[in-house]
Every structure is written in structure tokens, then in C-alpha cells.
Image 1: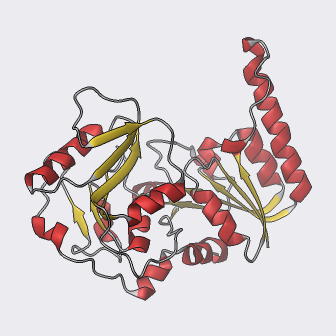
Image 2: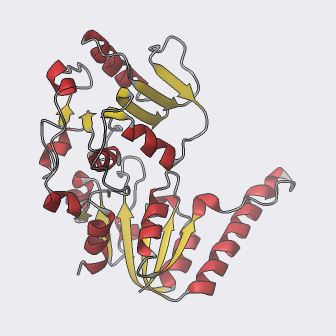
Length: 306
């Protein structure tokens, strides 16, 4: 099958998907985040239109060189230039969109959604409201059957300052039960007076670096973004590495892999972490359930769905 995969792949998750698909398919992966910026020396008034023209030309050349395609899969189309989308979709017989952000962050009109044969959304509320197909994110890493306890009691990495107050509340909750060997990383400028257990940094961490830190931790923290009901990749990273999760996202209880021994849902405004949750061992997810969330299971759902 000839597949066009288009995404602004800030996190690196789409590249993992592209690599998996290439095992059995002819895949043209276009990461718009990596398109080269040009015309840096042009007058400021011309710089933006010239850059847009250059990226459009680059996108068109890539599609024409590899197309036509049996199917186009566009991840988060709201992040893709509309002219790029038109070129990619016109070159593809079947058109699929997958939304791994909620409409509260990247809204789309019903007209924009209507150009796709199928639209999958990770957000159950968006899926119900707009008549989309609900689909979770995927496990992109290999299962770690020999996962050890690791160096850190808890770990999180996130971007932006908006969720730092919630993270500080979790740090204090862990402090109260005598747990201090956690690693909390936030990509933003340092916030004066923030909890000393939080480390601020500037450059986004590569996905493989994040995965290595997940494996070195015993619990992964997940603080949902405002308006988000879908599950972040943190849950799937944790499943592969056999790690527990503390989350502010209550919708996780509706998934078949949910086990209160592994996943603690807390109140963001008043987080309470029972010491027993920290000290008791991880309980394995049954294989038949786990497989559904792997890349292979995800691909089967997306590309064989009627």
C-alpha cells in the first residue's frame, strides 16, 4: 500500500508510526516541522510569504515525486497549511485524519472535517459531539518485561507554565508522604519561587530521551491540559515500561487497561497520594488488552476500518 503520512511532528510520535508502516508499505512521510526555512535575509515584509511559497513548493515536489497514494493519513490537520493539505489529499484515493489534540487546542470546522473519508479522535467528548471515531494514542516503544524500579520515584516532562501550579501540588503531596526522589522537568523559562523539585529547561527533549527517563522511573505523572479528555502518550509510555501513573484525567477509568493498582486519579486542586500506591508493585496488563494499544493494533484499526 502507498501511504502519504503528513504531520507537524513536534513530539516525534509520527516518525515512530512512519517507521512501523514502512515495514510493509511504501510510505511518504512529510514532517512539516522539518521543512527548511529560507529567505532569512529577505526584507521582513516579504519573509513570511516567501517562506510559505518555498514550503509549499517543497511539499508539492515531495508529493509529486512519490504519488499518487492509496491513502493519506493526516495527523492533526489543523496544524497543517490548507494548501499543503489540498495537494496531499488530491493525490490520495482514501483520506483519513487522526486528531491527537482536542478541539479546545486545535479547533476544526465540520466543513474541514468533511473532506476526509474517516476522522479518528483521541478525545471521547469531541468524538461524540462531532460523530467521529474514538481512537486512543499508541504504544510506540517495545514492551519492557524486565523493567526495574529505576532511579526516580516519579517523573514528568511537560511544556509551558500553565500546569506548573498543578505540578507543584503533586510535588507537595509526594513530600508529605516522604517521597522526594522525583524528577519533574518543565520546558519553559524558570518561574521565580516555584517548588525546588521542579527543573526548568529550554530545548525540547528528544522522544528517545524521554523514553529512557520513563524507564528509570517508578511512577509517571500525567497532568491533563485544560479541556482535554483524551489520553496523552504518557499512559502508553508507562504501559510499555510497566510503570504506574498518577493522573488528573478522570476519563482513564473508562478504558479497559485501567487498573486502580496501576493508575491513581487525583483531584488537581487537592491531590492525595496514598503511600501504598507508591510502594506496591505494578500489575501487568493482560496481553490481549495490551496488544490493542500497540502500533500494530492501532494501524490495523485505522487502515482496515470500513
